[in-house]
Length: 216
Image (cartoon, rainbow, N blue to C red; front, side):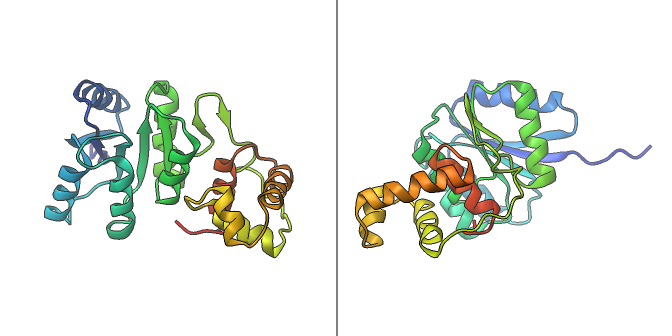
């Protein structure tokens, strides 16, 4: 009987014990196999450049690594291999880092202490749907970002604000860019949080991606 080919995964993480354990966990899922493991972004990129035709279904990318970290690697992938699906892995649940990884093309973001069940769910969702953002960090749910299909009317300046919020600019810098006071920008933020039923800037970014206000 002919068996279905397994999905091919690459792990990029500088912690050897973690990456080895992760490989064993992935093998236990049955439908996946780890074809390579790399200790930083540089050796991973070198591999991609030397093996441009390599079949890769998913990359598990650590955010914090020496030599070339996850964000720098993600930026390279966005410019050179946007076809590759990436789930970012981190011990950090900082909003700024999550936003940077997502806006540079990561299809999911998981904390390293995520349960095996959620980890498997994340892999399956990214493989089947192209993203996994329903539960980004421990204790943080982005309400209705991926499930709410209501048509919400946004004003032109609100859309401009959302686009700026998806960059690395601070709210103060956004205020300067839009020639508005920081207080007015705070008002835009609170109005949008209420209108879109979200609680964080991450939720705003995910809404923008889902509704194609910004493209990644």
